[in-house]
Image 1 (tube, rainbow, N blue to C red):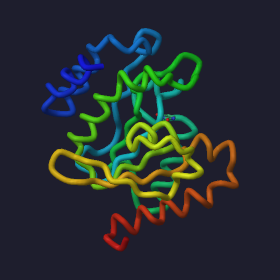
Image 2: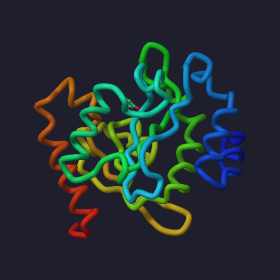
Image 3: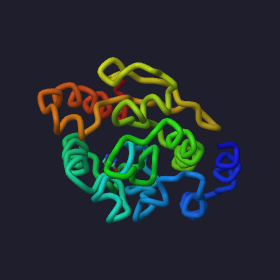
Length: 198
Ligand code: URA
């Protein structure tokens, strides 16, 4: 992981970071994945969405949130006036775990310096963590997502403090649509934050 940190730090731009990650072979997931899934959206955006790991559609296409979860995420963003030209989207793990299993804590840990550098380079005001793995990775909390959702956490960037907003993962909402009302609350809070009203 210290090697990952040194390499991630070398990247001066997101393009460089993507190239360094493409050459990084200490995460075993890269050997079973078809594609590196680095990011989608606008690197100048004020808001960054962070998911867990690519699934089959994302692995095939090479971009995050392309399948059913992505369609729901697009709808939720649209409901508050966002789209992929006004948000940046990534995952805490950039390769698909085989058979869509969850990434292991080791896999998350080895990729973490890259996602931290990616966040630094995007320099967003607000990072929306979709689900527990992203929330736990960025904030250090061990609480589950039904406890943390709706909560704001500070996130230290080199030059200032950004905010993490935890919310439910769209894949969870597809399985439990009744929980969408909670996510809707969080997205309204996100809109208010972006408008400077919170
Ligand atoms: N779920 C995620 O967490 N990320 C993706 O890119 C797709 C589905």
